[in-house]
Image 1: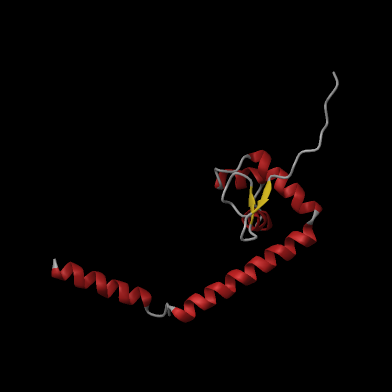
Image 2: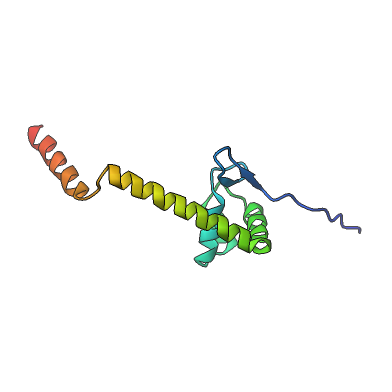
Length: 113
């Protein structure tokens, strides 16, 4: 029997916003990499993200292991952008005391009803 060995494309796509996602899903590359860094197995990652097939997870992790420096730099850049966006949002909408305000509003509406 002759086995046909052919290269397999990496199931990654880049959105117009520059986000790298697993093809056919909304799962970003950094989610899979973060789970891998936390010790999750490919099977656990596929189970935690049902839109991902096990083959996709293995292909993405193989890509990551071959391009670790580039992917780590991309993940760090995305984390920095996310942190900056969160800081800007919190500066505009102060979360301090949010829980207390929501509970007070809930108590008011329950009392009025």
